[in-house]
Amino acid sequence: MNKKNTESGSGNSYTLIDNKTNKKYELPTQDGTDGPSVIDIRKIYAETGCFTFDPGFTSTASCDSKITYIDGEAGILRYRGYPIQELAEKSDYLEVCYLLLHGELPNATEKDEFVHNITYHTMLDERILFFFRGFPRAAHPMAVICGTVGALSAFYHDNLDIYDPRQRMIASHRLIAKLPTIAAMAYKYSLGQPFIYPRNELSYCANFLRMMFAVPCEDYKSNPVLARALDKIFILHADHEQNASTSTVRLAGSTGANPFACVSAGIASLWGPAHGGANEAVLNMLHEIGSKDRVPEFVKRAKDKNDPFRLMGFGHRVYKNYDPRAAVLRSSAHEVLEDLGVKNEPLLELAIELERIALEDDYFVEKKLFPNVDFYSGIILKALGIPTSMFTVMFALGRTVGWIAQWNEMIADPEQKIGRPRQLYSGATERAFVPIEKR
Ligand code: CMC
Image 1 (cartoon, helix red, strand yellow):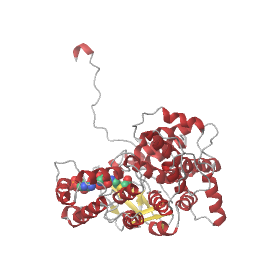
Image 2 (cartoon, helix red, strand yellow; image 1 turned 60 degrees about the vertical axis):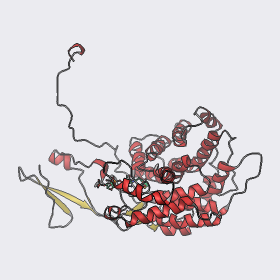
Image 3 (cartoon, protein in one colour; image 1 turned 90 degrees about the horizontal axis):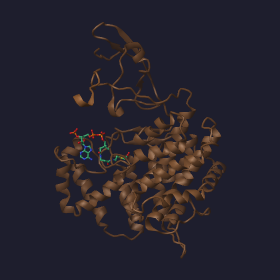
Image 4 (tube, protein in one colour; image 1 turned 90 degrees about the vertical axis):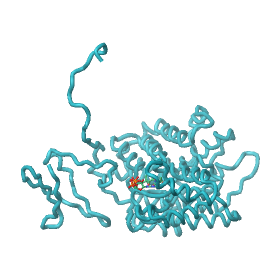
């Protein structure tokens, strides 16, 4: 069957024509509130006997969502309608968490109650602390948090009915609250230092920085500028519609699985260098480049088809314009370094030079490869004293709310079905078994 898309007279459906039989199939379209319409192909297999083929899902809308809107061509990102730049400037991370989960910004009472709920769920069951001791000290922290978050399902399984919205919300609070505690403890374990327990009088980010950097033998004073910079990073990473890790959480959750186990699957998906692992890869790349005069050599390598090297922190599946998150973090990086009194930070200078050369280069211009969020987040995280191996963990902390908000939306969706893609089979056709002595 050849596909020939012609817009039908009504303008709200497409006609698919089988060129062999001339049979026509009407495919209705659905309009969203913003962004491209979708062609509804749910009945296409039943009617035509064909599947659609879209490896990497570049043309597939996997769900109907009200949470996050991206226009990659225009460089727009909005959570529940609010532009990311405004949220980064005027809101704070926990308020954004409430917005993503509930659909509206909280009033003052709702916000107090939400902050209280998160604050009072930050402690871990003491038995979880023993899990850390089973990991090698040099284990990558993403491996540790993936395992430990998955293990939370053992603690919160039997008393969780995922079809009860209130119980889903409690699970959501637990995840947002406990992730920083787990992440900081994973770091402390890697150093061989005592775990630092959460403090309820501190803000979400100040508490996290304290759990990361305090030691029991002296007082720790958190720096509000650094806590605010971290808060901004979390806001910018909080959700990004149906990216690889979120789709992983939705797919795992579509079976009715435990949400802590689903988020653990999302963490595994985030870890890869093409996704959340890129912020760590950016720093490693900047170290490898070493000095400004070597930038052209690396740009040349990135353009070479026979060299697998890519400029980490450049390009995005969706943004074919400047990543709006990168624009916010670019100025935040300067603010943080200024506040810390870091003059002429060589890595930042190197990053700016790399950005300048790449943005002027025909290859990057033609392919619309702009710096993405990971390009600048790594620089800020480094300035905050976060070790490189923890960078992707920072992404996971910020994204937890997005994963769980999307999971909530999916479970509450009456049209929700188990995610079960099909395939184009190109393997061997039926053949007879060959006994081992004849192979
Ligand atoms: N350096 C050099 N060339 C690149 C790069 C890069 N960073 N990114 C894409 N290209 C080229 C690629 O070789 C291809 O060229 P051609 O058309 O000649 O074959 C073209 O640009 C399109 O690339 P693609 O891989 O087909 O694009 P994609 O949409 O599948 O991949 C990406 C998007 C993010 C995986 C890719 O740009 C990449 O690997 N970037 C570096 C890793 C990175 O920074 N990832 C973080 C993404 S942002 C955080 C997040 O949201 O997870």
